[in-house]
Image 1 (cartoon, rainbow, N blue to C red):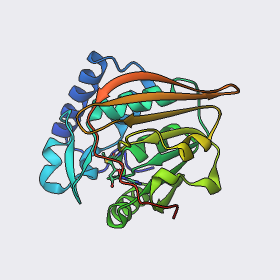
Image 2 (cartoon, rainbow, N blue to C red):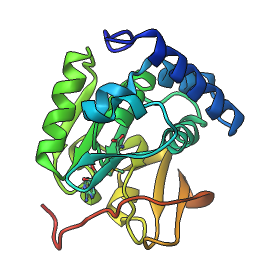
Image 3 (cartoon, rainbow, N blue to C red):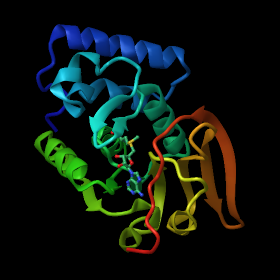
Image 4 (cartoon, helix red, strand yellow):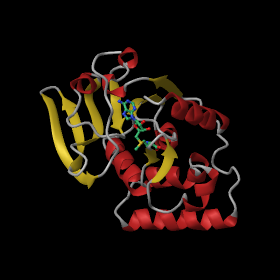
Length: 221
Ligand code: SAM
């Protein structure tokens, strides 16, 4: 993988170190997650005009009315997903810029990434391929239907907010699997951890959040 060192000057390295310190101070303790963030050049996932702001702890526009999520929220979601141990297959709904996809690809065996906006996914795919990632599978589709052909997944990460958890995604979660998903209307969303076991699923509140909506069509694609 070549993504770790592409075009990084000293300034960028210092601002990245500052971001890692901030994430630690905010309670991100999983060393694997912090290392993945340290090694993934977020400035390559935003437009050049915004590159100087890439290591601020803030969401940034990526076009088509969408955003690359705030680093703290990305770190929190990744840490929460992986807290149960190593994962083989993870479904990501809402690939966006590909930044969260890249982090996941460093931390699990295979990532299945679904994004509904074709041009966003094509840009992310090109970016990730040229950075050396080879364990990511891409699909342009309505991710509320998941990606049934590769189910069940050890982990499901949703980065846009439905009003409630899509039943189809629950069905694609392996027994023992974990899903991290923002849920709710625009002004009152919460991040949930959903764990599946033999008896069913349980939901745990993680954090209050503010995501773009999961836009879902009427019927199954
Ligand atoms: N994780 C992304 C990143 O690191 O750039 C940020 C994703 S952005 C907050 C949410 C993404 O979810 C957008 O790219 C949006 O197009 C996508 N999205 C919204 N509804 C979707 C759906 N039904 N299926 C797939 N993707 C969807």
